[in-house]
Length: 158
Image (cartoon, rainbow, N blue to C red; front, side, top):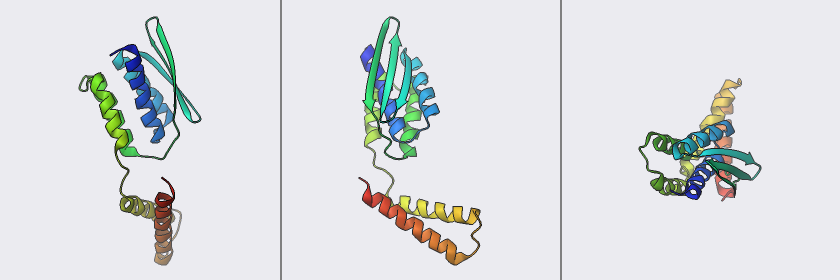
């Protein structure tokens, strides 16, 4: 792979992690790890709405910028991206195939609405219990409110 292709690969993985809600520290660590695996000195600088990559390979230096807005949290995509980075580092995934992997990962649909709704409703009901709700009708009201909120969240966002 050329220097440009390797730096584009690092930037694509960083963007996937960023837009799907990975923590900044983990993105920085994963980017350095991936850069080392590809023979680059890579440094990501997240900014509001964009990611900047500074990549070096000997005397060659490159600065790249890509737009990246946090769209939501998709832990499945994050887990797949982190696993692919680990596989690249271990030599189990070829760098040439990694762009296809990141493309397929980005095209995966989010969890079905019913799963999202059930998880959100159960989560808010559990928080209600943790914070002291002791009556079943109140917990059920919280559960239904959480479910309605989840359905509205999925219905109002693209």
